[in-house]
Length: 299
Image 1 (cartoon, rainbow, N blue to C red):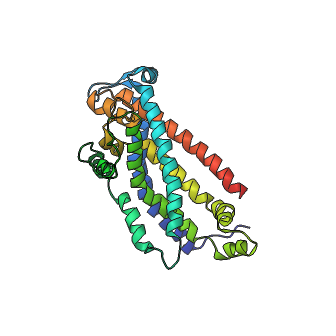
Image 2: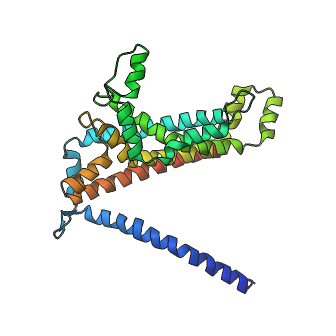
Image 3: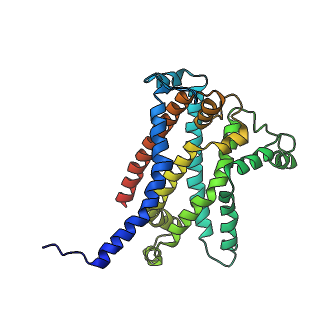
């Protein structure tokens, strides 16, 4: 027979529900309602002022035929994959270095603050900083190259090179957060496991690959998914670094959403492109989650 809940348990449940109400309210107002509105307007031709005109799937059919769409789609994919791969790999290596102990190690607290500081800056600030640093004539990057005897590089107007420059700037801004998550995972590894591996004859490389890396699988999953989502949604940092130049080679689909919304007032096409981005991000995230979760289950 099921026991009746006490007054204390009922009050506790009610208190929990009351505290959740603001969260659900904010989620509904600022996430769900805008999401449903974007999906709705993607089936309309609307300039933001007059009465929307239902056009069905015409906005979606029009997207592949718009100027530079496939170039921007490719740039978005290259940017997202490049940023995710570099942030996760370099973040893991950085976390390993920050986790090391020894007489000659640099103060780890100071280094953590140093690497995490870029995460506190807005994307616009980071973009402006790197745009100045990439300046052909007076930028810091070319100054260093010239000082060591290498030729100057036109970082902001060269196909291929500019995308790499944008990715580097984005990696610098996100590396600290990724490293902090990895560092938390590294410091949660029981020391007796590593000691047991050493007793069994495993060298340092074998301990890192066979013991530490498998235990870090959940941290890898978190960093890959969150970093890739942030990269697909990125707007202000890539735009302020390169302004989408040269051509459409560094112009992302998020920048095209802004173009259709606020420069041409084609809110229907902008909504359709936004929905397409949401679908792509969801599919990529689910695929990553399935693949990485399987890896966690293996270990």
